[in-house]
Length: 417
Image 1 (tube, rainbow, N blue to C red):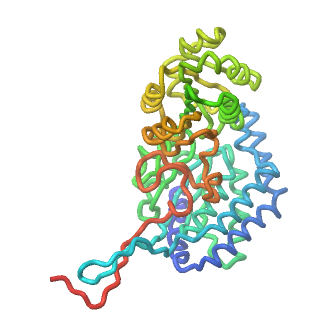
Image 2 (cartoon, rainbow, N blue to C red; image 1 turned 60 degrees about the vertical axis):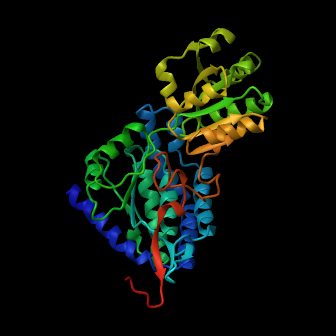
Image 3 (cartoon, one colour; image 1 turned 45 degrees about the vertical axis):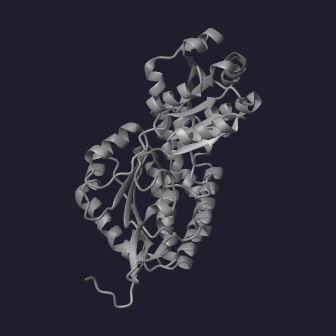
């Protein structure tokens, strides 16, 4: 029964995706704005359904950071609606032609952006992903199949019902948004076998989920295993600036993938910087674990183990390491990082540019919090995920990353000899 249900959802999404190819930008934008208004008008219903998930989360003793990601407050719902409206304002990538060149034989060759087709998104905890993903896929001309985690089943179902209703009122097939209502893991494995209907799988969640998807999928997978994000405080850092940035990167929302997990500190500035920084962290409930050099400066810091350098805590826990110089910091990031987001705090332009060139993570910042590694903050309207594998997309993915380029040629009777 589960197999036939999921295949039916996927087949309908494939059929509906074909109708999106010729859909005008105006109609897509009108539908996105209707979806935004639908969320606002149904906020009470969404919160009521979300309360069922929160009650279960409390009973299952999920961490405060996970409950934060699960909660649909008025602010979160308004943020979801605004994200859809921002997507509507973005340029439509579909049909855009770039790179036109004239060949010696007179042919003009270029590339046209086209939708991927059907995108399956498997995610955990965050119900706002439901509307963000649906909006981005609609604007980029893709159908989407959504499979959220069991912890958010009531919230996700309610959001999808609102979005589908808005689509139908806009004259667009509601089948362009498919929703898997089955929480058992076998539903995911069934979906991952439907290569005849689905073009790309994007898993969003913990490392275990993503590795399971990669190991079982017959469909291309866009990978983002985890976010082990680093900040390096350089010897030429403005320390007041560094205190603000590092505190924000760790404590503003510790349960998200762009939160700082390891702080690297240049040795010449460590004695001046670390005592006050650790004090600020502790005032905000952070459990600090440090290397031997860190512990020699701040004596009551717990010992960091080798495992700590690899860890994505998603909680108020931080690993701290003092490095001899920037090169050692870069080598640490290369060894233990996850290609997600890194930042340097420095007033030295030369070293800032060296850090930008040598650190190959999908987002690298200078004098700014890692928390800015986000599609919305980068002007993408919202993001469908963050890719840390080097394929057609790298970093936060917006609507253009949900399209690919096909070659288009204009001739005047040329034949090949």
